[in-house]
Image (cartoon, rainbow, N blue to C red; front, side, top):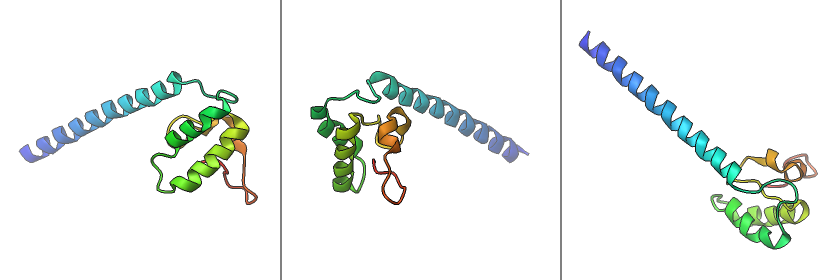
Length: 106
């Protein structure tokens, strides 16, 4: 009986910690979206290399990511925030597709 109570308390603690961690991560992600000026035409062409370096910094495919990101940035003048995802912030970047229909921009 004591073991069951201990397991229950531990599960409740883990649940509480995971809820707090999720809230912290969500606030951090929202901060990154709010702290920058994103969207179509939000960049100048000379800003593309640094924004693409940021965008591609955590991928193992750095060279192709940089190539396509800079191509997309020069066309859209926009690079989404973060290392991946968030493409809805930049519709041009999000909607540009390859011949096969896959995403062109990383």
